[in-house]
Image 1 (spheres, rainbow, N blue to C red):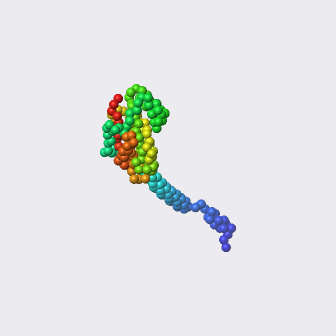
Image 2: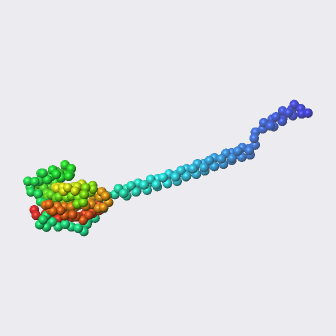
Image 3: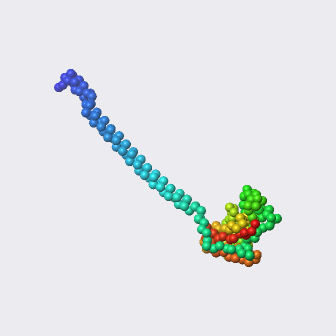
Length: 215
């Protein structure tokens, strides 16, 4: 049987501190666990970064497609040039008709004022031209441009007479703008009651009509 002193010594031995080797081992395990956690976090961050980059690439491609389709149609001058000759398709307007012609211009008020000033200075002339859809009312549009000004016209089967500012001797351009049915833009111009159907236009194609050359 153990004495009282022996029992006390045994208890004290059991209460001895854990050896340093065990503490070092525990610290090493903790460090390894921390390292693994850090690696996992970096791996997850890399995966998330790659996913985000993929989504950004898709978004960029989508925006690029939208940007591409929204670009304006490039204008191409058609081989057709209409010479007015004696039976002019463009009628020069008298000075007395100027104010009424300017009021009919399909332009903003500042642009109309600019036309008025340049007509008064003798830089510009005013003329009239009559246009229509040579087929039927399908919703085609053309742009009539001359002397740095432009007017967009919705073509109807019924002829429409419009005012056009122009520079003497410089052509008036009729530009295809909207093809409503995909079968080209059908436009006609008039000399009096006589109708002249122009070449059917694709959006961006241009037909030039000679303007009066006189002062």
